[in-house]
Length: 61
Image (cartoon, rainbow, N blue to C red):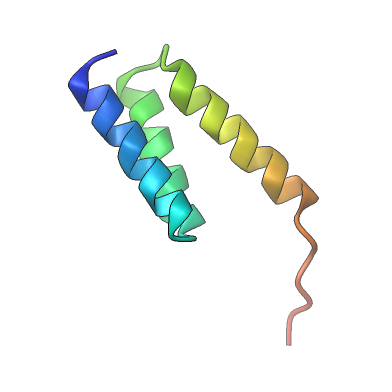
């Protein structure tokens, strides 16, 4: 794993920790675009996808 791959994935993780799922997903997707074999990014995106599917639906106001 290169330093760049690790840095991009870590930025994605940091965004997830502060509750910014959109930015987190962007960085994991960017990691995967630059490093298509990144198991870390693949796993994170799968986890985020599963969480989105299981999240309660919000009612629009």
